[in-house]
Image (cartoon, rainbow, N blue to C red; front, side):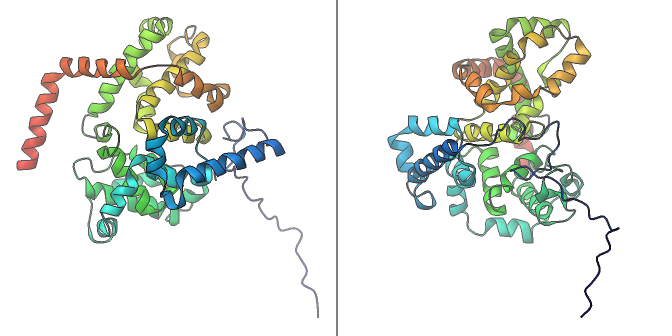
Amino acid sequence: MEKRRVDESVQVPAPPRIDRFGFAKQEHNSPDRLVKSKSAFEYQREERRLRKWRKMIGVGGSDWKHYVRRKPHVVKRRIRKGVPDCLRGLVWQLISGSRDLLLMNPGVYEQLVIYETSASELDIIRDISRTFPSHVFYQQRHGPGQRSLYNVLKAYSVYDREVGYVQGMGFLAGLLLLYMSEEDAFWLLVALLKGAVHAPMEGLYLEGLPLVQQYMFQFDHLMREYLPKIGEHFTQEMINPSMYASQWFITVFSYSFPFHLALRIWDVFLYEGVKIVFKVGLALLKYCHDDLVKLPFEKLIHFLRNFPDDAMNPDILLPMAYSFKVSKRLEELKQEYEKKNGKVAESQVKQKQARRTA
């Protein structure tokens, strides 16, 4: 039998290098750059940590609520250290309240996807390829990842027609789909926007972005109180938070930040709420303080949208973020903002009620 001859002149393209999260590796911003190879001791430590988490959760999450009631401080400490990646999908559903929503609404997601139509379908299709384009799950046009993302976003736009679909929502849904099924991701999106555990996020995506405006007001005041030299310099250079921080809140750092850092922020965000976004924002500015107070406008804008790699290490940045105590001040600033914008807010509520009764 004659052996087949291989044409050595044919060049087979090398498969793309993929990091541990599924993103195509890029030398300048790979999420693995700051992560060194693990020693045997570190692997053993990870195994012990995983056993603790499995014991805390129980089979399928059966022990979770009991453990949270008994040892809330232990749960908070472990979440701040980072949820084991293999358990992230389940833990996120448990701490967000989305698992309960799923169980209370059997068949609803399927109904929304299959039998309902959305006015946002073309907008969703147009934006899908912009969501995590370097991730293997979303790279194939009309592939399984893009189809799942379309289904979740379409279902939500039907479920909540007032919010419908806004571009930033794609990054939330896209992140969730990397850790859970379509239906689970949909209900977690509902839990976030409707406020199953924490304050609802839907105001980030409503017309006029009312919650974004409030968060920018609060962040600006916090920044000036905690980092007065930066606040003074930003005033001189006419820099305001909407120029650099709105995406932090709209996508919860999932848009342009290293994925390994975004995941650690999301662990805390789902358990403690939006205050972690304020804290991380303040920590970033504090870490880069000496550079920020020297830069002119153009370089400031570029810097604030492209933080250096050393500022993106979660083991350095997050402890710095936790040192900021903002809960009480955030509530005071919220009341101040609402009082200041009371007439506008009242007008928006009346318009909202009018649309519902029309």
